[in-house]
Length: 160
Image (cartoon, rainbow, N blue to C red; front, top):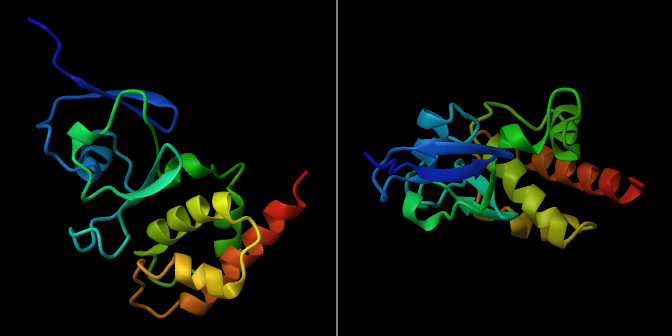
C-alpha cells in the first residue's frame, strides 16, 4: 500500500498528514501538528487570527486549502517565529508594551507585522496602522499593538 501522505514543512520540521486536499491549513496546524498559536476566528479570512507565513508571506490559514501548499513551501507559525530563549523582537515588544489583552488577535497581529517589517523595516505609525487594517482586535489594544510594532522595528534596525 502506497503512502499517500501530504508532506509539509512547518517551522523547519517535516510533517506528513493524511487529510482531504480541501482541509484548511489551519486545521492541519492545530489538530495534526499541535501548533495552537493560529486561532480560528471568523473562518472567512477577514479577522487575521489564523495568520501564518508561507515563504515569508502572511496568509490566512483558515482560507488556505492543504492542496495549495507545496512540500517545498516553508510554513512558519508564531511558535516558529521565536522561542522563549530567543524571542523575535515583535514578541519581546508585545510583552514590553503590554500589547495583549485577551490574546486572541495577538497571533495574527504579530505574524502580519513580522511579514510587514521585512518589506518596511522602519515604518511610520500610519504605515503600521495601514498594514494591520485587516487584522481585527475586539479588546481595544490597538494603540499598544502599534507601539509594540514600532518598538520592534526600532530594535530590528539597531541589530547588527
